[in-house]
Length: 193
Image (cartoon, rainbow, N blue to C red; front, side):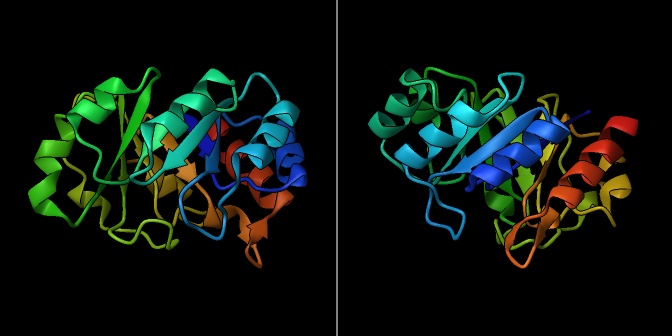
């Protein structure tokens, strides 16, 4: 099972993940308290261990901006949380993770069948640090990331849903910033499965 630490915004955050070596590191380009600019992400990516795949997180943003980040090597994978349609997803020249908010039942079927490489199941209030009822995860052959309120206290239960990857952000923070010890602990828990 793989793990992604999302919402990295400081150079020390990169040092923490370089020590823990998760599979993925997420840079948020959408409106959020964790938002980074392209310049900040460039600096962070240069510091990031090359063994860790950089994921850019977007919400209804311009494909030209996304393409520039990919071409410049700032990100390797694109994670989409907005209303991006199949045409948009197909136009992205990189692997795509498409977020599906569990709770928007009318949209789930359509989003699961989209041309993305991966799905990401999240709570209806993405970025809130709140979990959702994991028994509602739809059946799919597509590999999926599980997000939403995952922390060391519920990581074992999260792993029982058999995701391709666990996606953690606020669950490895203290006082709104990334916490080295929490990152090391949760990555170790997933590795020891």
